[in-house]
Length: 171
Length: 367
Image (tube, rainbow over all chains, first blue to last red; front, side, top):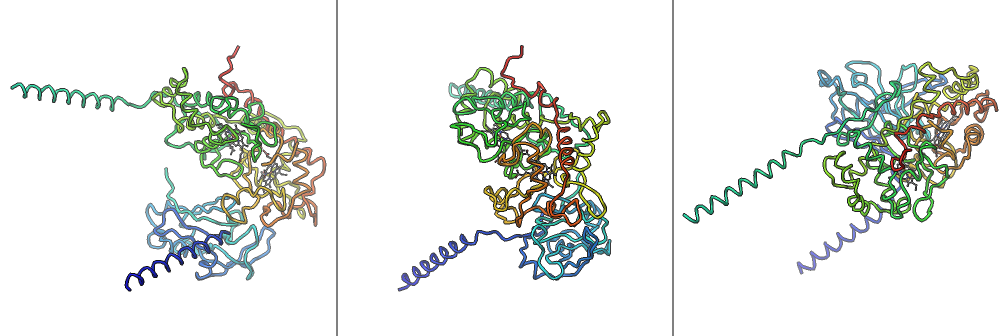
């Protein structure tokens, strides 16, 4: 009796494994994610739905044409803290030589020093936005973009952000 | 007594053998090679890629050049890298699709090999990281060179000249797949094009014509119709003095692309029809143009950017809404402006590069 019981469980398990794999195989269209990696304690890979659960703030930025636009997103500082980057009290000494490389899906890259992103150094809040004026970001802009307020050129407000990479400046 | 002396002899032998092995091991001191000095202008910047395990040396570069022009690397013994990458055409082949073994056409247009030192992701879709990894791909491709690499290693080992060349470059006469790729990569890193009229202009040695100057301005600037600033935004993607930036874009060739480009690599819909923005250096020599060689000449390229940008979800933002005329729908360049941009593009032709004897076929005996 016990033998039958066991083999039923094994069969059932096998069944579920095959089912879940075939279901998985059908969902091949990849979901966009943004990754936080490099000199981090805990690498992150956040989808739009993971991102939606994080505390959002609103930030305004002028478009290239000079029109004020309202973006909503998560402060980069919060993402860095979540990934265990040396910000806040730990941002001193050699940690001040760390930078964040922002990479977009088209290969575009810009950098920030960690101090530029930390509220103990600056009042400016740089966010990774996932919506503009209450709507998801447009094709070619989102699903995630950087919003850097009060900068004369929008060049560092990178579009289609896929990676935030923390590194030490070497030599 | 007898036995003891036998033991002594045996230990002596052991010590001797061990010593031999040690000597042999420590004797494998670094190969004597001369570093190859890669020379390029300061305005190219130093964001170059040379892996630590494959420094560029004179011996390695020479071996790489031999291999680049070596037809023994293909199954038919007729195809070398240079079949599809000819120096006089800035290392392209003038065809929309190249043919290697069996005349099966390649899926994409052959690419110019200039200033690869500044490229990190190779091919039209950026699928190969680093030149060493890239070189293995054509060598192992059934259609390009007949997937002959494993056999070619054995063939080269048996030749008179190659074992010595491998010895000079890598310290032992062993021919290996990795060493073939490493030497070819070293040679490719030396293919630097930096002596075009545009370079001479940057160095203050050449005075551009009025047409060239206007073309340069149009190429570099972005239009701001309401401020009366005219431009073609080319430098947004093809900018910097290298006339190369490592970016991937959908430049509006098709609304529904036949070749998915980078999407087939990443699986992301926003990468549909995205290809690497390639160098425009020597562009006059590298027709036909684009990943599928669809444009026969630069006039057709300019017509494309000016009048035929095809909309799609992944079309680059830079190619949307940059009209030169208030309320314009397309770029709105005049015929003269288009011609001037082409004049500027022709300033990128580097005759020193395409005639440099250091890059030519070393198997052909010079008279």
